[in-house]
Amino acid sequence: MQDFTKNLIQHDVPVLEAMKKIDAAPLTQTLFVVDQANKLLGTVTDGDIRRGLINGYSLSDSVDNFMLTNFTKINHDFSVYDFKTAKNKGIKLLPVLDENDRIIKVFDLRRHKSKLPLECMIMAGGLGQRLRPLTENTPKPMLPLGNKPIIEHNIDQLISYGIEKIYISVKYLGQQIVDYFGDGSGKGISIEYIWEDEFLGTAGALSLVGKFESDHVLLMNSDLFTSIDFEDLYLNVINQNASIGVATVPYTTKVPYGIFTTNDNHEITGLKEKPVYTNYANAGIYILKTDAINEIPQNTFFHITHLMEKLMEKGEKVIHNPIVGYWIDIGQHQDYKNAQEIVKHIANGN
Image (cartoon, rainbow, N blue to C red; front, side, top):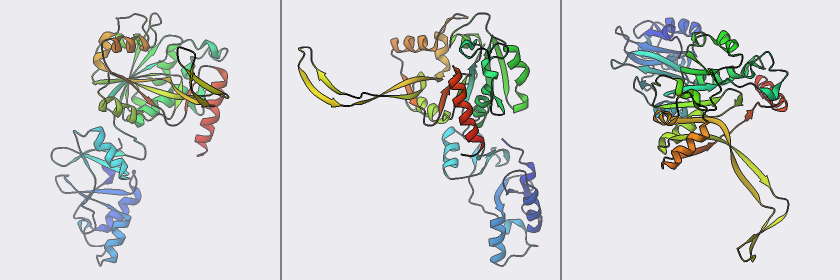
């Protein structure tokens, strides 16, 4: 969300005032035209003003002669689908209106990719032993990647998808993470820390949260560097009514030989010439129904894969969603080097 107050203008002021205000507007050069009750009437841009002048209006005429009344907006009870529709239209600024058609917030869609109704748990308590000596005095999530720590890339990515409440599970050198992010207010979000007395695996820390307020929770490892589309994963979970959605990474195996298919009698039933097989690896990112957390034993070592198996045994649906884009699990030195190369290209705009 952005501060939109300087982008508001009264409908009956001369359009010359709008031209001055557009130059000073903190958001992209669009003004929201309102009446005395702050009800949103339309929008106006430089282009709208130029078209109005060409059509015979003057700089002393009021803004409402120039404004566009057919604009995209969403109501305060909007859904992810409303947000996605606006983004697909190429809208840059998306106003959110209350029941009286007054703006209560504005999303800058150049920065906000979605508004997911999720809370998130980031797992950040590991020892990072395979990255020693780098992790002897620094927890792995705090290793620098470009101009900020690994975990901050993930937090900023979550923020861009509208996630405002994040829990971080910490143990090894965890105070460094707490000192760096604090309560999250510096980023406009809320962060709480879950301290693990003992290592609880990849899902056990979820049991330590008193109560999640969202119907679904995003769980992810802190040492990932990825361009995952969280919205795509979430919508697939919703559309398929799955208990858990797992982000996956396609893993291709090429066999350099002709491969026979056979039956139990050793008869050859077919031949595949140099086949290519695609499997899907766990990417360490999950969206699960909050109710599923009840299946996790309290304060006990428990992996997310244990939860998946438990749910599937009960007949619950567990789905996967392939990541389109880059994904690196920064577990070893070469992984860290690869991520550093990618972040350089992103910084250079390549």
